Length: 154
Image 1 (cartoon, rainbow, N blue to C red):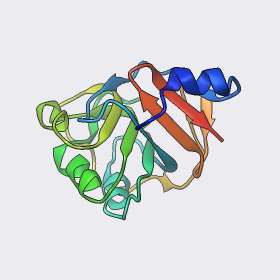
Image 2: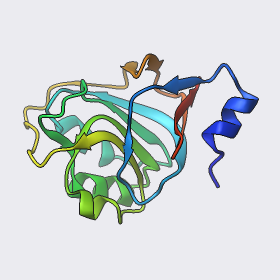
Image 3: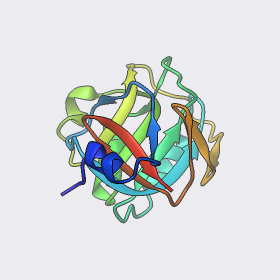
Image 4: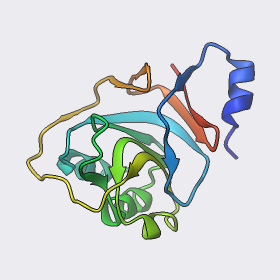
């Protein structure tokens, strides 16, 4: 059972709250885990490579620069993440294949959806601090997500 973000903030008022207006897309409304990161813009090669690794209950935080022009995550990549044991994905960008995503056993939060696929050049960075919604999220931090929002504890 995942601790609620509201209860977490009652106990830890100094925890970081991400202020982006995320929507729920995955089959799990609540998830938590240790953070791994990817920073990429309109190119999901590093996202796919990352979720191909064992997730071990981690949460992948993707800084897609807030782009709504392409999707960085679809049913195939999200399905790979679920199969490899990732607890969730938080995406500062868009998803696609929404009808399938809601049935996958993984938490997914993103800004919205877009049917256009991303580029495939492989540009970006992994395991770097990312800035989302007024906070900096470092690899190794603990992230909690539910219907109320996203909270990070360093």
